[in-house]
Image (cartoon, rainbow, N blue to C red):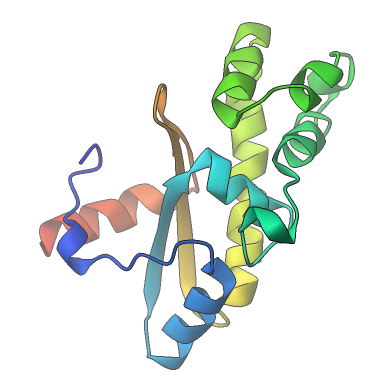
Length: 153
């Protein structure tokens, strides 16, 4: 709704993101806009093609890695992120520290990297959001793809 896209043309893949992207390649998809809640998609930033918790829940560890990817993040107490109960709580901490934007950029870059790998030759763009804070991050080509898909709805 926030992006103005219809779910009528969307594909829901739940935990099986890697499999869904691989199937999309086989079905001839040319472009994919992967949209999901940070709590689910952050797992893809760590290389998990199946995001079900029984296959390992490293949400906070991956957020911590993204935080440590730039100089400002290295001096912060990352144990606060590791001790967060939800990604929504972690987003609040990152926001309070003033580092939410660069951490989300790093996370989205990693999400896009793995999604593109799983999708083979398909162009993949990524948008991640929070139910409290709305859109948290988007890959560089996501806006153009959102406009394209909105026009064709």
